[in-house]
Length: 154
Image 1 (tube, helix red, strand yellow):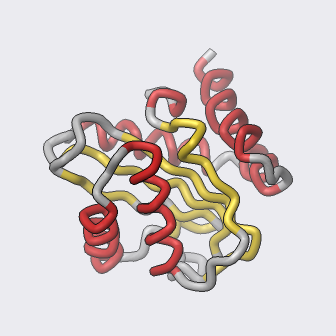
Image 2 (cartoon, rainbow, N blue to C red):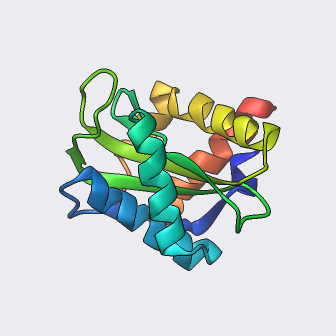
């Protein structure tokens, strides 16, 4: 699955003033509402429910929050680069500054897993993470995420 098929340019942001995980997840849902028309309240509730099962901070400063929503017909994503890392309860206890959130249809099954695998593969690449951390322009961040995967597939 190509990240370009699930990540709109307007769903990529640099955020400078987040101080908590809950506030970050709210910002993710606000972005998802603007970019994809998701109901902010449903999205935040679904993300918080998922986080209650276990934190989605995967280590190395990366978090992959994800949730399923009945209002969706396809998988969509949001990417946030934080100027100041925050505690996310990550497995390595390192604060998070790169967040790629996924929202999938309630009955998506394998598509959700394929999207999560594609995002995880991309975000595990140290070169990609370094490029993301060294750029502040949303269009550049989107290009790094979508071009990297296209070149990996070639």
